[in-house]
Amino acid sequence: MDVPRLQEMFKDDFDIGAAVNVFTVDSAAELLKAQYNSLTAENEMKPINTQPSEGVFTFEKADKIADFAAAHGKKLRGHTLVWHNQTPDWFFEAPGGGPADKETLLRRMRDHIHAVAGRYKGRAYCWDVVNEAVADEGEAWLRASKWHDMVGPEFLVRAFEYAHEADPDALLFYNDYNECNPVKRDKIIRLVKWLKEQGAPIHGIGMQGHYNLASPTIAEVREAIEKYAELGLIIHVTELDMSCYAWDDRRTDLLEPTAEMMERQAELYEQLFSLYREYRDVIKSVTFWGAADDYTWLSYFPVRGRRNWPLLFDAQHRPKEAFRRVARTAGVEM
Ligand code: HAH
Picture 1 (tube, helix red, strand yellow):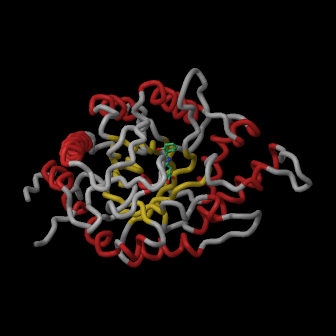
Picture 2 (tube, protein in one colour; picture 1 turned 180 degrees about the vertical axis):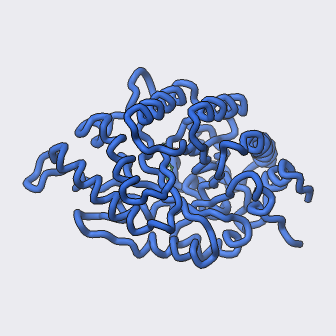
Picture 3 (cartoon, helix red, strand yellow; picture 1 turned 135 degrees about the vertical axis):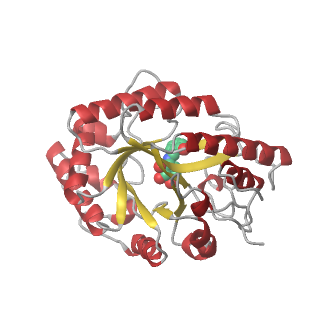
């Protein structure tokens, strides 16, 4: 039986993407070609992989993904230029030891962005310029990080400026998680407004979309989309998945998902995609953080070795009930 294709069903609504890595472009090649029209490198374009030591750029793995995208006519989302994680320590260190000064840090940021966004110019049509700069908890607005602590909030503005210099045609995004939590959501909104006031060239908001069966509620997702949409930028859902476990659930006994989990997941995915379709004027892309359940970062994190089943295709790349229900939101019955 022929499985209907997500990229066809939603072609008048938004792009449908998947995060890939150097292994899954081989192991999930057929599924990727059939179902998705956009790809994101899960890790291969992050600073730790593209510039492991100063001035030493390693693009083989990122190129493999960019080449796969080009060969199969897929769009490519760039992820990610400036982040507090998966960024090598040398960025922040002075040559003689101790912390680097602000000027050095900004020069390194600019060199990095120019090298990476420059290399994929004309191939990556957009970039997550800054990832996860907002504080999760409490009163603090921006997260304590080496970028923030050593440069100040200005680091965000500079990142967008440098990215725009490097590739004036790329759409530039601020990307974050827990983005439907009302407290963090409002801090993200404050950040985006501030960036615009500072004249930063920002075009979109990346809602990561790392959800689970318990949270957020569909009402919270709706309210977040509504408020982000008011900022007048476009929205990409950049890293969608639906974990079977609540964030603080540490259970490790399951070898397969329960029927209840898969039913609840299907229901939530259906509600989510009906919602996305309602906001198709502002949501331009929906990317899953993986292609199928045989490989997902959630089988390693936050509980190492515990399997998870967060995507629309099972470990054999067969459509799950969640797929059927998502298809239904596009009027495709199967
Ligand atoms: C994301 N962080 C990153 O953007 C992505 O690059 C990485 O591959 C996986 C997830 C999300 C995140 C989270 O869900 C919980 C705690 C910290 C970060």
